[in-house]
Length: 432
Image (cartoon, rainbow, N blue to C red; front, top):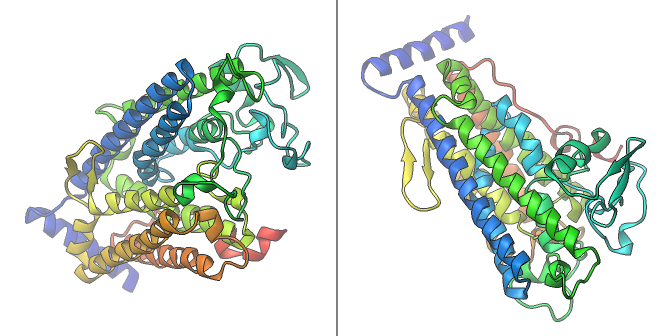
């Protein structure tokens, strides 16, 4: 009876607020779709700038051109990582995302790797297939002509070959690997003599000559250049597709705006699942449990501190109904926060405080990565101080999720299912 009464009171409060001119659920959902469209447009613009930098690198390989392409990749991640708040609750986005941001990847499928990588894996038959070096491949028992590196080869044949998610052939992280190469530093110190920021000293160190047809290192520079060109174009094309899905009449916008409650369920599912199962669990706690640099999100570039930070910014965008565009200006309108404040002002204050506390913990990590040590060094075994910085983020994300669950109850959104993670819910299972 108490639960029914609480739901009725929540509905009555929202109806009364609507009559008084306060935020209405349909308007909140529309603003959410407007923010999604703008955010994906910025991600597309970032990818297009990356594409221009890649084209310059391939036209005139050199250290400055390689650094410019790497910086363009890092810049492109800022808007994209914020879009991940639109996953989980939107099946259209979730189905598309695997070709764009899948990780971690077994890089030996794409290109040459260091001898320390090994020559085979019980978990992946294509662990070192090296498509760049081999114009003919054996995939699923069949001979595949890989003489031409095409979108069809990468997407339809190689990406997740044999259903193995480690066979990542497309998306941001394939581009990242090609620009940086393997990060061979693990969780240890940077190489002697390395200069620059902790990130620059500790990341992968592929030479620009890997793309120089006249002074080729690593072999197969023509095919490596072609792979980078194709996979970057695919990233741009995929983001164009997602932008179209969120434009007026697009299928993602139509789906989320078809019914206000359905839209709110999508919004809160995205917030809860990214906050808990995905970010706190799979992306952060798992790496901390294993003390494994392979479990960091942007592992080749050592950009993970920014990837996590902008995931949190994306969640704040959704709850607060405001997105700061890359080129200035903001999209702002009715928000989940407005709805919660109508029903339970104290809960809205709590939710806002939780978001800010998590962001503050992220900022501690980001400052440390910029000035002291990289993210993979922070999760190293025996690094008590670094581990504590990362654990503090996990703790804040979990607390944030608990408040999101209370928001879901206050708004009577019974259809929300938040994804879990063994790393949080059954840590012992990680080692099985």
